[in-house]
Structures are given as structure tokens and as C-alpha cells.
Length: 182
Image (tube, rainbow, N blue to C red; front, top):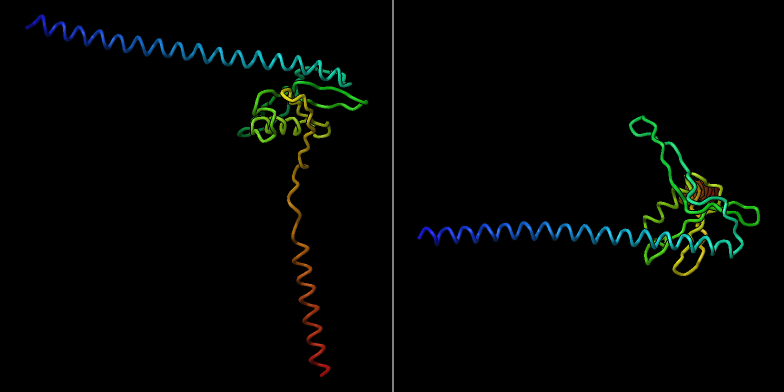
């Protein structure tokens, strides 16, 4: 009986070790394949940026800088923090400097993509007077991006109040005039 109990415990121990080893192997494989996927996307991104440089030159752009560093200061709890961003290209065409961000894939080249939009908005925040473009390397399409001026809100409706007040006052005076004349 003791040998039977021992073999059951031994089998359970082997099963437990097998589950632990299998889980460890599964985690390692998942990490490996995730790393490969990220490397693959990064390599594709770099390849598309190289293609973009060729596309820009072929279309009359002079590349001033690649992965140029732009920075600004913001405060976090009163402490200055330097934020640095790197648009893909600073170019010039017809004597005008421009910033160009290169995107590839299905979602990234779309302005509806929040990460792309936020990235472009940050470039606009730092360099509001330099035209900003999104180069979609999937479709070889250059898109000009315009953000509204800072602080711009929808048109004020205050004029409607004043118009209503003037019409109301005018109507009151007119009715009063008609009643007094009668």
C-alpha cells in the first residue's frame, strides 16, 4: 500500500513539475515571439523611412535633418521637465521648411489614429509656424496637417444675446410709441 501511495504522490509531483515547466516554456515562447514581432515592425518602419527619404528627394524635397530633436519644457508639480520628440524629417521645398512624419501600416498613417494625431499635435505645439505633413508610405501619399490655432474655440454666441436685447428693446419702444400715439 505504501508503494501505491508513493507512486500516486510521485505522479502528482511529476504532473505539477510538468505544469510549471510547461508554463515557464510558454511564457518564454510568448516573450520571444512578441520580441520578434516588435523587431519586425521596427525593421519595417526603418525600411519605410528609408523609402520615404528616396520618395522625398524624388519629389523635390531637400532633407535638412533626419530624426531631428525638438524639445520643450513643461512643469510637473512645479519642477521643469524637458520633453524631447523626434519627427522623422525636417525638409525644405521651394525655400520653405517643413516637418514630415512617416507612417506605415494600416492604422498609423490615418489621422484618426490617436497616437499619430497626438504625435503630430506635439510637433505643432513646438513648431506652430512650420507646415506639418504626414507621409503615408502604404499609399505614397503626403497629407498636409493643419491644427486649429491654440485657444481657438467655436464662434462666440455673444452677438446673439446683444442682437436679441436690441430687438427686444426696439420692439418695446415701438409698441410703447404705438400705444402712446393712439
